[in-house]
Image (tube, rainbow, N blue to C red; front, top):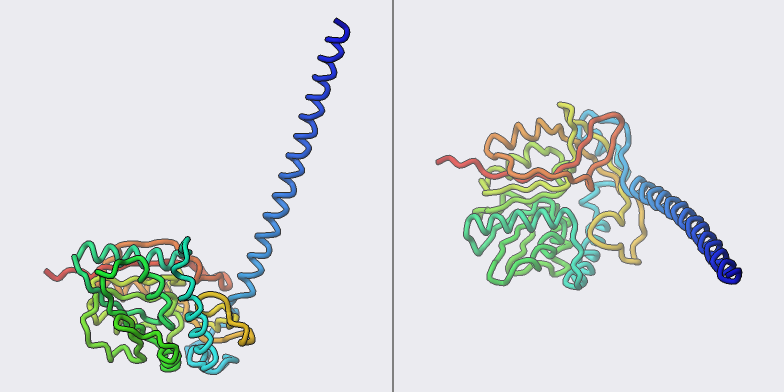
Length: 310
């Protein structure tokens, strides 16, 4: 009996000790986990802060900001455009490797085009990709559609970017690059622009130019808006490596790129677009937006449908 009692007491004590050790280990693990999470958040925040930030100084006009930029001509810069071409070429090679890497930008774009195809029962989709660089958006979404669906995809870009895209051999039967939006004479079904209107000299002019095509849908991705009722202009700074898809090739030296940036008043934007279009979808898209001073900055993606005149 005493042996049994002793054994029982020993087992109970051993189990109690195990529980204390287990609890201690769990507490230690939780502490280490919390510390690791904090470190990850700190690194991510630092990375984002270093990758793209905005100067706090405001400028009266786009040209005033342009004169103060340390990088001449930014997206007309030969080296930058060549690097984006090289990055896109490398990016293309990995796009079809499973699992496919998805982002908010390509998910919204694929969904919107798929919606158009089903609604209109069309098999040829004519697209303007305003500010589409070297065609990465086309290469990303093409894999989601069968060969029975054809595209006529016009990328509107700066002359230097168009030259880089053509030199890299990106043009094909579906993908074309133009440096003047007025050269597109085809009827357009769908207009896409990802974070570009903020970087042009006169966003109202280009927005109205896009609207003239009377495309059935317009999708604006990675938009940075001001909830206050005024636009304002700053100088945006990004690392050269942050431009274009994928990692920067080793032959390039990373450096800061500067260009004027207009943060558009959300209500001003809607006042223009909603003369001809109604908003169909809206979604939070903060990858292209950053806080500036005490302004009420929001990041959004927006899909608009042409208002029927019937």
